[in-house]
Length: 199
Ligand SMILES: N[C@@H](CCC(=O)N[C@@H](CS)C(=O)NCC(=O)O)C(=O)O
Image 1 (cartoon, helix red, strand yellow):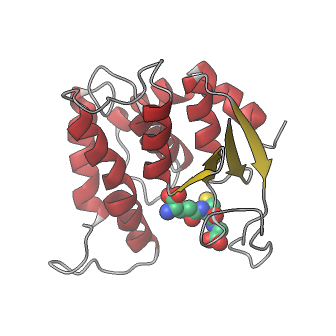
Image 2 (cartoon, protein in one colour):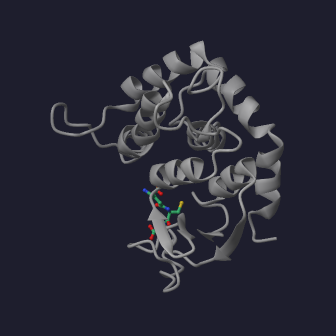
């Protein structure tokens, strides 16, 4: 049984979405986190080393960081084919885009948000103006990050783009708008929104 350490309206909400897509047996453990307004606190029950969400425990096997959790879950529950397995040709693209999400795309948006220039040749990421065209190129051939196949990578990218659709940080694009629609109209996404508060 998977336990998802979750805080409502945080990066762990998308893992309710993924667990619903996977039809995996899971329970949600609500935890507190430190909020940007200074409220909240690390929850001693949360196994994430910094008390962040998401984290999961699979009967005591702890996994933290979104790409690792996505990969672990799609390997662990392969029935609905939400992640290419070792030996499948799309495995390479799957691993690459999962890691790109937290290694490049999130830092790119955070740099822009903080108005910090990305040091060329030093930072491991690139500016948003360079990262988004790479993602748009993939989605233009789409409809998903792995072409025809919806995967856990879309759970990360689709929910992020849905959340930031109206943000000035997010470049406007009909490709992104259509992609977000494809993701947020999935029944599992609606179930995750309803379950988000622990209901
Ligand atoms: N790199 C982590 C980021 C997780 C993260 O920052 N989660 C936020 C909630 S959206 C959090 O727990 N913040 C509380 C804190 O920073 O202490 C991942 O992708 O899983």
